[in-house]
Structures are given as C-alpha cells and as structure tokens.
Image (cartoon, rainbow, N blue to C red; front, side):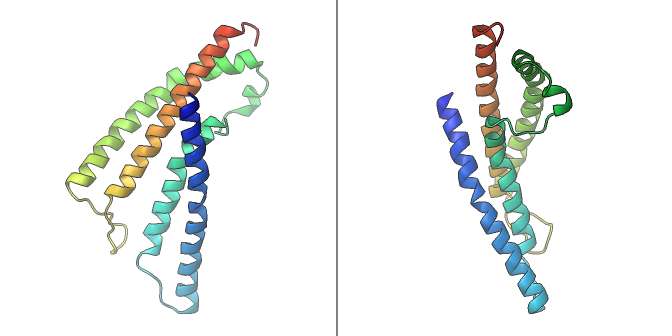
Length: 164
C-alpha cells in the first residue's frame, strides 16, 4: 500500500505543475484574442485537455488525503469507528461499482480512439483523442488502486482496534 500511496502522492504533486501550463495557455489566448484580435485555434481544446488531465490525475491524490466531497454535516459527527464503517460501506456500494463501470467505458473509448485514430471535434484544430483518453484511463486506474489501498487500510483498522 505504501507504493500505491507514493504513486498517488507523486502523481498529484507532479500534475499540479500543469496548472501553470493551463494558466499560461489561457493568458496567451486572452492576450492574442483581445490585444491583437487574433484568437488561436488550439487554446480552447488545449485548456480543456489540460484541465481534464489535472482533474483525473489528481483524483488518487485527493482520495489519499481524504479531501473528496462528503456530506460533512453527518460524517463529521461520526466517531472514528463510524467514519471507517461508513467509508467501507460507501466504497462497496458506490465507489467500486462506479469505478468498474468507468474503467470499462474508459478502456473501450481509449481502445477505440487508438484503433480508429479518433480526433476531437470541438474545434477545427481536431487534435488526436487517444492521448487524452489514455490519460483519463490512467487517472481512473490510479484512483482504483488508491481506493483499494484505502479500503484495505480501513478494513485493517476496523479489525485491529474494535473501539478505534
């Protein structure tokens, strides 16, 4: 589990540098559009792909640090044991089934993008879709690994300390 935690930590920190790239792309686009009346063809889709990459490669990092959205009105009032039990139940009922579905769909989309040489058609720049779809698949895979590691950690914690 330490290796998975390290991968999630490293990926999250490395991905955070893409925020600077996203800001630079957007600043460049704004300057070109409004100062020189010459908007770019590529900035919109580049910003969408950078933003998406930041999200998906950050999911495992966020999960590792328990920074995802919860209904804290209830969760914050639970005992440590109640929180662990809630995390285990929610992982089994919601997280793992959702990850299985998303990984299956993402794998299919990624395969299709590489085989058919799919292009993104949001603008007439039309960049290849396969690299971005691969990144989405990687992000989902990292989240799945981190989720399994956290689930095992929660089960272990529940078994070791009955009172937590």
